Length: 287
Image (cartoon, rainbow, N blue to C red; front, top):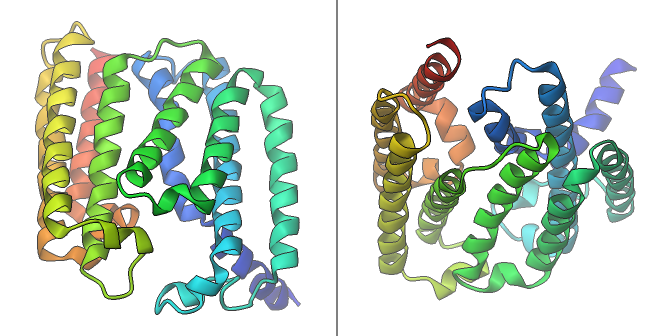
């Protein structure tokens, strides 16, 4: 009986994509850089924001899969998604959206200051799923905006000032990751429709620009936003990670198609992120 329950639940787990929730850790950025992670009140409020964005992102993924199930069923990889493969009916998927929406509403009532960013995140994503994802350049800009909304929500929930340079870093950093995915997908025959409006040259150019601006923005933040003269050396970890990801994009594009998996698959990239985190924690919390 337990096996039956597990097999019945697994498609729903795949549908809500919990491995994508790693993106929602950005909500902790304001409290982390404000040296407030060890404050139980601030941490608990940020945790609520994190859970809210996890539910909201899962709602959006489910909604998008309902809209695209016919197109996904013809895709060599996406055809295995729960709705496209008929493991989950559209009716049950809509019911899941309803329950996710109830959970979001309840959590937002606990942290009412995040109503606007959560509302913008869900509403823009709905328009994105219907039409905006088919408009070249606008599609990648909007995805970057979703990352920024996470940081803003984290700041609003804790009443912590969010540095403009952090916003700029996240904007260009997320653009770099998104363009890396688009560049990897562009080489495939079965690709999303909007990629027909991109050229490989344009993607390469935008990828290089976003990587450069992400490094520059982080470098400026490291010398202007903290009184420690040692923060600038954390740029080394950032540059290494970006260059390593760039190398994957051009040598193993199929790996760059899933950056959230690539980070854990490449031990050097994972090591650079962990080293950066330890170094920043040491500077902000222990020195």
